[in-house]
Length: 454
Image (cartoon, rainbow, N blue to C red; front, side, top):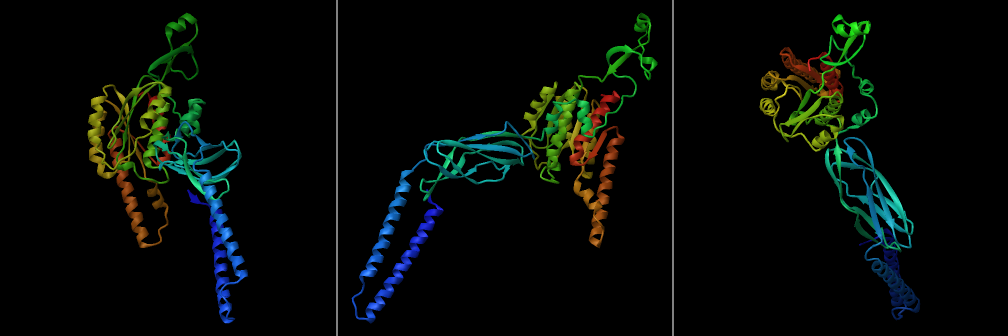
C-alpha cells in the first residue's frame, strides 16, 4: 500500500498550512514582545485550533480509507492469449478486468510479459464501472522463438476515496509458443500450391522429357513425343493414346540445419538463423504437398533429428520440432555432421545443407559434401550477408572507403570461388540474401523435382 497522488497533494496542502501557522505564531510573539504583552492571543489560538482540527480530520480520513480495503477480493483478471505467436508478427493480448464491487474502481494495469516479447501501450489507467467488466487490449511483438511465459497481471488499485493505492497481482501464469513466421504456410493451406508459389515469385520449370511415375492414359496431344504413345491402347481405341507421367513421389528430403555461429548475424530484428528456419518450413510444406517425406537434422549446437515424415498435415510436427531451436556460438563441423547423417539415413535422399559458407570452411565442407554425394543428392543453401552488398553500393569518397571497397570485393570474390568449387563437383548451390532464401530454395527444389533427378 502506498499513498496516492491525491493524498500527497493533501499532505502538501497540510504542510503549507503548518508553515502559515508557524509564521503567524512567530509574528504574534514578536508583536507581543514589543508591546510587553503576554505571548499568544485569542486570534492565534483560533488559527492553531483550526489547523489541529484539519490535521485530525485528515489523519482519520486517511486511516479509515487505508483499513477499509485491506484487500480487493472482488477484483479479478482473465487474460486472452492467441493460440500461438509468430516471430516478428504483432499480435493482440486482451485483459478482461472484472469489478464485483458496488462502486467504481480506478486501476493502473500492466502485464508481466516475458523477455522474448516486446509490449507497447503499457501500463494503462482504466476505471471499471460497478459490478461490470472492462477489456484492455495491447499489442505484443515476439522477438525470440520458444516458449513465452506470461506472469500475473499487476494492478495498482485506488481505494474508494482515492487516498491510497494497493498493488494486486491477479490472474494465472500462462505459456504460449512463439513459432517461426509461418504466415506463408498458413496462406498455402487455403489456396493452391501453384498459385501460392507464383505469389512468392517462384517459377515452376517445365519437365524435360518423360516423368518417372506413370499417372494415366489420355488422348494424344500436340507436342507429345512418340515414346509417350501407348500402342496397345491406341489399337484398342483406334486413336492415338499417350501415357502421362507425374513427378516421382515418396522421395526423402532431409534438411541439415547449421545451428553454429555462422547464422547468428542480424540484418534487421530477425537473425539469419530465423530466415533459414522460415525458408526450411516453406520448402518443407511444398515438399510435403508434392508427396515427398521431409526430415530434419540440426548440428553445431542443439542436435536434433526428425526422421522423414509424409503428409501436408505433418508440417505441425516440424513446427513443434523447431520452434524453440536456436543458434549457438559453436563452430560448425561439417564433416562430423555428414558422418552422423549417413549413420541415420540409408535411403537415397535430397540433402539440403543450410549454412553460411566462408572461405575458411572450404576443405571441411568440400570433404563433407563429397561424402554425402556418394549416396545422396546434395544442395548447399548459403546465406549472403546483406552488409556486403551495402558496402559495395556505398560511394567511395576517401582512402578508407577505398580500402573497405577493395577488401569487400576481395572477400566476395574468394567466397564465390568456394561456391564455384563446390558446384563444379556436382553440388547444387544457392547463394541468397536472407529474405530471398525461401524463394531460391523452393525454386531449386521444384526445378530438381521436375528434372527427374529426384
